[in-house]
Image (tube, rainbow, N blue to C red; front, side, top):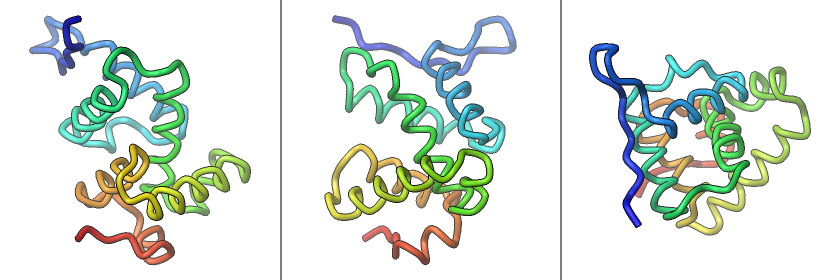
Amino acid sequence: MTKRRSSLGFLGMFGRSGDLRELDAALRGADLHPALVPEGVKLTIVNLMKDHWPDEPPPDAYRSMAQLFAYCIAGPETFEQANGTERRLDAERRIEAALEAGDSFDAQIVLMALHAKLISAEVVERYGVRAD
């Protein structure tokens, strides 16, 4: 099996790869404009997804990941205004579980937001997120 490759495109002649287009759509669906996320962060996210799901991610993977990432960036109140209480509570449960597990896909997404300096100060304070 060949490894899926990600591509940003080149001078408008070659399009973005499907995984990056799907990520952009998922970010928009979570009310996070893709332009607010640096391309290097997006490439890292899709590579984390490839590591976690070597064949293909499940159909809901991009949406689920984007919601967690958007929560980390927007913070609880802004995220809830755009996505609703149920999704906010789900994201909070996932962060708590990720911090307990320490090394999970969700923990890697939270850590990516932290290292990229995109994470909300409120999320850092609320959950004590830090990189050791």
